[in-house]
Length: 396
Image (cartoon, rainbow, N blue to C red):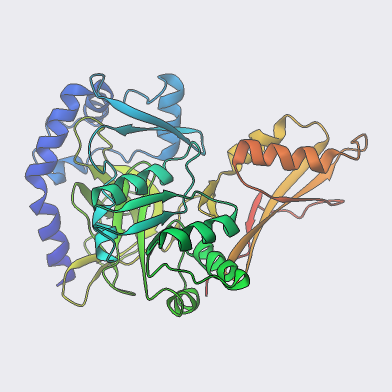
């Protein structure tokens, strides 16, 4: 049954994929070059497309370094409305049009729509998440409060004043807002929430739904937009339109047609920005919903060393680059922990003998400026062997 559903889904997109890839290859030489390099004479089906090697995030960063700002991956005649810079750095365009990242179905599934006021608690600074959800909320007819992140007391007061019934943001941030409202003795008005960018363990979902009746989880990336959304608690992630989603073997890059865990690989059906066979770095598996529909099982892990902290990716390479300009640091590692459903980040550094007393503060400022994360900085005499990012979180 599962294999049949996967095959039906894939073959059902053959015509749309072929049309989008043909148009995109004509408009974007970088894509035509990838296809030619893979010795694919023509793309007549998804099976042909599977011969093209997976494009990684590091590949995108390298392409953008060589051909800024977008690595030749956007048609020259395309109207770019905004440019964002995600950790990496990776530059992402917002193309013209309604709901360009396609998040509207996830909002509708959570019951957010026409006439609602939505508290948007994703960042509006450089990264695209805030704009993603604002565009989606406007597309479903909602009014948006561009709250961003920080100053929770003011956010609670504004939410109460405008009777914001919807919320989009991190699940941990929603919990913090509820706690803040209780401390202020303010009735928190949010009744429906769409949360993403970090796991939603059962314990946190249970706590949240005592205060916010409907809490749905969704999954997407800055590059590809929406890739899956719940239609009910624990329903698995329904597949959105406008994109081909595959779960692929980490070694061969070929798609699975069973419930084996693999990397989520996506192809956008968008000729002006052809993201083709893009490896998200997220692990998932296929499953079936209670209605028999094909769904993703959720995000089951990551490929490689990068981890997400408070909804922001932390890359070992970028962390090392951020601290490279500080001669007082001879070694470092980042430790991620989680308590009461909130992430904490600590940077442990080994200081050079000549380091001055203000080293910790300078490192703190470097991390905030280059990584867009706040971290406690601690000087230690030495560091254990192991990775420079040590994730100690227990999501159970």
